[in-house]
Length: 282
Image (cartoon, rainbow, N blue to C red; front, top):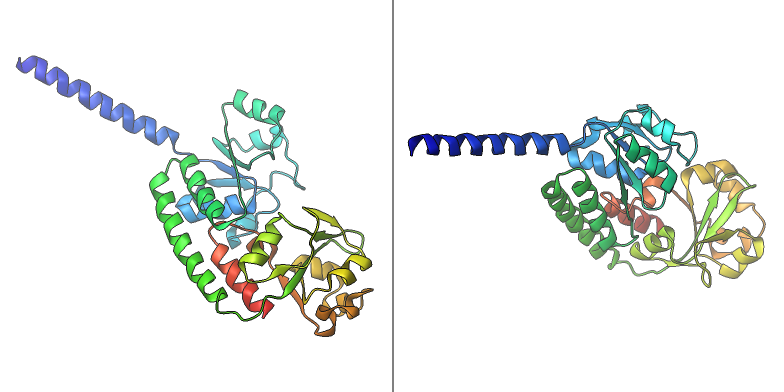
C-alpha cells in the first residue's frame, strides 16, 4: 500500500512538472507585433523585452524606435517574419494573407489575428485578446479594468464640455495625397468620444479631399496627424489652402495636430487620446 502511495506521489509530481513545463513553453519569448496598438498593449502587459521586431506604424514606447522593422511599408513577407525566428506573431485581423499564414504555420510559428473594434468596449476586448495570446489572461483582466477606469474618468470630463464642434479630419502625405475621414472610421469614433462631431457626413471610410467638400462641410476644427500637417508645410500653409479661409476653422485659425498613434490607438492609451483631443477641440 505504501509502495502504491509513493507511486501515486511520483506520478502526481511528474504531471505537475510536465504541466509547468508545458505552460512555460506556451509563453512566447520572441514576439513580432504588426500594429502600433498591438505593440503598446504587449508592452503594457509586461512583454516589451520579448518583442524582437515591429511594423512601421509602431513608434511607442520610445524604445520601440530602436527595434528592427519587418518591412519598409505596411506589407510583410513570410521570409521577413521568419527571419526574426519568432514564436508568436500578433497581427490585426485581415492584415496577413492566407498564404503567409500557411507559411508561418509550416515554420512552426504561432500567428494570432486580433480584431480591433473602434469603441470603448472594443478597446477592452482588444486588451484581453492580446493577453490571451500571450498566455496571461489574468494580467489582461487587470489591465482592462485599469483602462476602463481611466476611460470612464476621461469621458466624465468630456461631458463637462459645453461645445460640440464640427471636426474635419484630413489625412495628408503632402498635397499629392489628401483624404477626408468619413463615418465608421477610427477617426469618426475618437472625435465622438472626445465630444466633437465629424463634419464629414454621408459616406463611410475615407474619400479624396476636395475644396468643394471642405467648404460644404464647414468645420469648426480641422484635425490632422502631426506628420500630415508637417508634410503640408505647417499651420500657415494649411490656412492658405483653397477654401480653408471660408470655413469656421480657417476664420478662427483652428488647425489641430495630434500624434497619429495616440489618436487612433484604441487600446491602453485611449483615455489619453480622448482627453488630449477634447482639450484641443475647445
